[in-house]
Length: 126
Image (cartoon, rainbow, N blue to C red; front, side, top):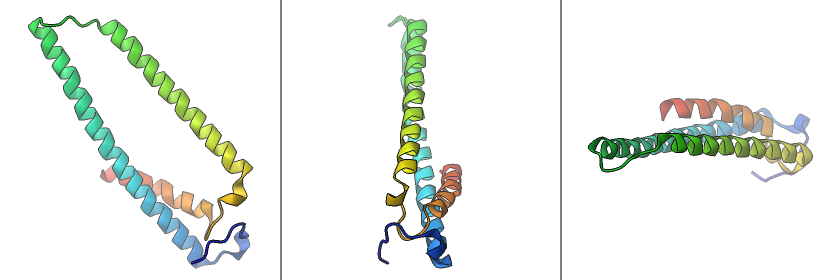
């Protein structure tokens, strides 16, 4: 199937819409599954690290100052959330500015509508 840039939405066939939505669903499911697996691995590694620190503190081999650790962790999470919001805002502004470059063989709206349920299902199954 050839890629067509700037194709009008009224010219799209039902087959193109279903293919776009199905592809978006598949990519969303794969992304959700992968995200959940990576989060599980990261949680296990972080949990083992903290458990090791607590064990060493219990044995008296190290002294942990939890207040600075909490402050640094809170600051890092705030920075991550801020960066994610900037990324989403920049992506949205780029899409609204250059929307004609996104249209390929199908509707990007159909692909997006397929991606979201796929992401949720992949995240649940992961």
